[in-house]
Amino acid sequence: MKQEIRPSCPDRPMSGEVWILAALALAAALVAVVAPEAGASAAPPASMASAEECARCHRDIARYWKASLHAQAVDNHRFQDLFQRLKEKRTPNVDALCLQCHAPAALYMRDLGFEKKVSWEGVTCDFCHSVRSVQSQAARPFVLQVGRVKTGPLRTAQPSGHAAEYAEVHTSSTICAPCHQFVNENGLEVLGTAAEWQASSYASRSVTCQSCHMRATSGKVTDPKVARASQAVVNLHEMPGGHSLTELNRALLAQISAVRRGGNTVEVAVQITNRGAGHRVPTGLPLRTIVMVVEVDGGVGPRQTAERTYTRVVADENGQALSDEEAIWLRGAKVVRDNRLAPEERRTEQFSFQVPRNTPVRVVAKFYYRYDPAPARGESTMPFLSVNTWLDAEGRN
Image 1 (tube, helix red, strand yellow):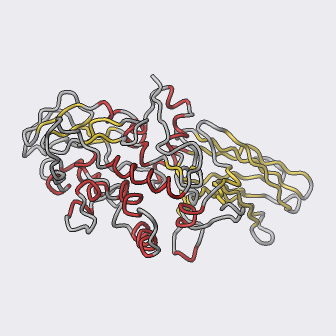
Image 2: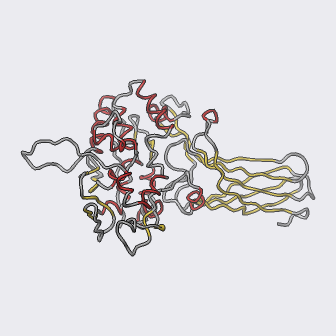
Image 3: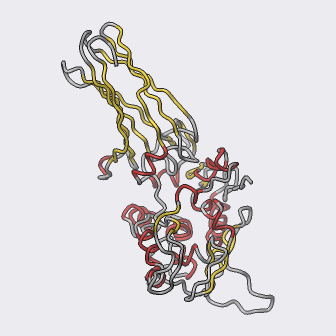
């Protein structure tokens, strides 16, 4: 059955005042708890357990999670730099807007001074495993119950250290959507991964986010020293994405489909396919880019290159292209170019090079993933795929 994910923000732009109120409501969404019975006094939020406590019994899962970007969501330099700049500029409601997805435990426990260790653990164990359901059309999408009962995707779990309860939301993409879909006050869809998935055949085939990003892998749910279990697989809590060489190569297929010579001209065709991602490639923030570089070397003269980039370019209300995260979040208003590859899309790119006739030619197509195109920030470009072929002096492959 196709799961439906609705955006957590309105379909139309809001005024600044209304946007702030909406942001406050969205912040409350991540601290929503199961409501007490009528007449009961409101209690302070329960403390969430640190991932270190969870790791005592769930060592393999914790090991994978610790290597994830979820675990690094709050203490990585990119987030911290942007978060501090926004606070210094007194951006309205910045704690709620940023911490709701980067430090949800801190927001839930109202630990905005980050005095508790669990607040520094990003998207930590006890946050996700306290989610009972997601109300996609409600102002408070996450329904949490923090305590001894932990929720998850297993129907038959019987742990000894705490109680466990099956929650269908853990098998659905809806648990991912609130933090992977965001519309800013100008109506720009800054993050659109959930909507991209919803519009694809993956959603209709019930291929969820977890199907790709939390595949079964070797490991024990519980450390054998604590409890023995016959199952030797766990869901991959590293949750790899665009920063993973494996996931990039699973997503993109490339081949040099044709190399033709005509006099002193060599024509090259490169076919690329989004074969394995249920969203656009690349997805997420507009600063993420796939770069294809085609090189032709005829052994005479310098090596020739040509480049294609696949990205989404965002501009402000005046049409000025934006090249940093802060500007995109706050001032982004429209998309001026988007040539990313949709799920299952196949595209052929054509190139032309001047090479002396009767010269053997080597053709290479290299692919790179680049998070931030501004080299002054010291961000590296990650190579992940390369294909090549030869054309001999007679024009034969």
